[in-house]
Image (cartoon, rainbow, N blue to C red; front, side, top):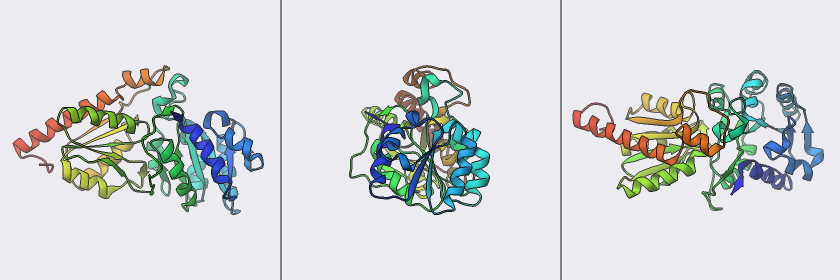
Length: 321
């Protein structure tokens, strides 16, 4: 398995061979974000800003007005909290063409602890106008998404990651901003996952299949703008949904999906995620187990939402019957 940050650094270095329009900005964490790979290959296109994320965002905003494409790299907790004023006012408000690539997401950060576990970044960036949010599920999708992100005209928040992830896709994968990807078809329940939770959702779907439960599985790698059409169609088809994310259940993928359902086709829904609390410092897998982010937790959520769907159909309540 390859880490997402390693894949990010390799993808940057590979793209730089064929395009000279971008530079990479770093906040003294190149080893943590994978950009040391790019720095070694293209040192003249690597700008060290030091531990000054707020200033780095402002530098990137200024660079973007000169025709240079800046890629800002740092940890997600600092991109979404420490430097968010500069992101909002200096990048998003004027809609400057800056790409913000953030690693160290959610409980996957592990032993760095709650100060570095970004459990709010989706909620923060979703609330800021003009920003597109992309969160690939594996290194292959990251490779496919990066050139699309760079070609997009406008600010993008790209989530990379720290830990190794299983390879889900192969080179035939295509990536399109704003579109979810159906990984598996099913009729009984739809599971919508993002990032590290996608491979766990696949394992959960395998377990549910053995119980005779057919799952449609969706990788929602563009969190904003979210694929409303696919969500509504999936809700109408299965009559219930489960979301899975390594993020606070408030403001993240689950909230985005719930907003769509509330405005269109309310159906029973369960959210798998961090239950509005700060976690501890430990191995990522141990944290996922303690805070209920494993495949078995997705299985339990699917069973629960199926019971609710059955009850609604029995009583005639709700629109998911």
